Length: 92
Image (tube, rainbow, N blue to C red; front, top):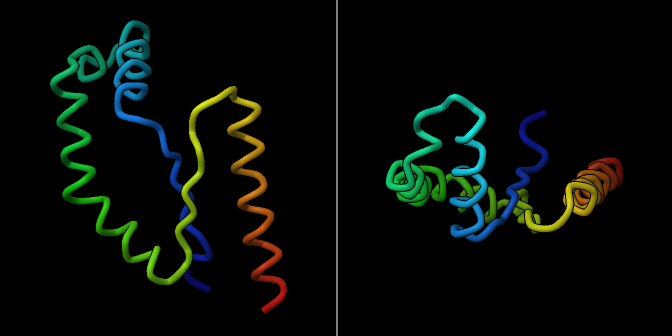
């Protein structure tokens, strides 16, 4: 059946750095405590993962979801995108 949809949470870089540094306080992951390592991840994403997203954008399977707000707000956005895609697939 293939991939029906790709959902990507969009969060600005500064917010992500803040979240990961906060996670590093309790995660035990040393890479979450070093801001330069975290920022390097964004560089790798832009170089390696972003082209994959572009592929799915061309086939209209990529959906960007606002990833800032409360957990419930983000969950509702993800759920709505999934439900919309499921309806679209059912209509085919």
